[in-house]
Amino acid sequence: MTIAIEQPQHIGIEVDDKSKVSGDTNELVLDGGFLMPETNSFGQTFRDYDAESERKKSVEEFYRMNHINQSYDFVKTMREKYGKLNRVEMSIWECCELLNEFVDESDPDLDEPQIEHLLQTAEAIRRDYPDQDWLHLTGLIHDLGKVLLHEKFGGLPQWAVVGDTFPVGCAYDESNVHFKYFKENPDYNNPNYNTKNGIYPEGCGLNNVMMSWGHDDYMYLVAKENKSTLPSAALFIIRYHSFYPLHKCGAYTHLMNDEDKENLKWLHVFNKYDLYSKSKVRIDVEKVKPYYLSLIEKVKIIIAHLGFFHIN
Image 1: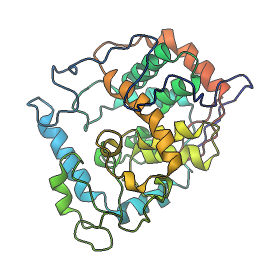
Image 2 (image 1 turned 60 degrees about the vertical axis):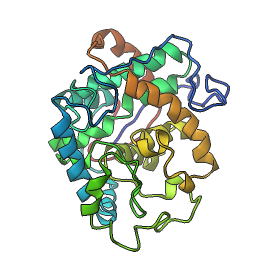
Image 3 (image 1 turned 120 degrees about the horizontal axis):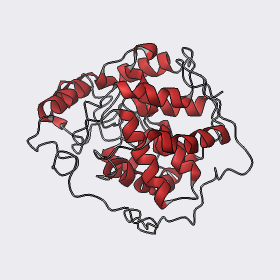
């Protein structure tokens, strides 16, 4: 995949540590008055996997398949296969439009095409953080790895692309959604993988930890392997935005290093927009498209992979 995005000298690609991140990483200081809704588009509380809804059974079945199949060996195989970055070329915007075909089966909060979620996230961030253009772009591209669902990128099943992520190679924490299904995973009873640290030294840093395979890790590999100019915080957000056991429940912190702890502050900021901007209110795509195309032209992300993005 190749993503080539030109970067002008004036783009604010560096993280401004003085930007609106408070000392308490669970609190967000806002400029634009973003209000977190109490219920999702189905009238339920967000991420309530026990609430009766039309999506409850399908979401649980998704996690059953995900937890059974996401083993250490599976993740290693997928990283080796998809890390070659060698398939398709298309623009970032074309990839966004490609996601119009897919609805995330793991998401209990939204059944809209994925491009709607990308733009809702990016636009909500843009309103409150108008000067952090790197964060706007991160909002736009954070889920682009979901193109793995498309036949051009291998047509992977949803359980291998979406859903909450978690480390493999160590014990599964009980904060994981539908934890019970891990008991059918081959790693669950493997003594090499079922202790707290597993194969990892404590404090080794999350960059040294294998995560369950999906769109997060794929997009992270694309950016990392092609020396993206996105800041460390953006790469952290891309790889760990679905790592809810960490950023919601505080699990797996024993594997983090100091850089992870700093980047986690920005992930807490991002997550509120990623989760709570989901709604049935549609974004006027044609109205906002010029702004995001201008960002794409400014920022250089060179990505070569399974036919990923080539910016013209």
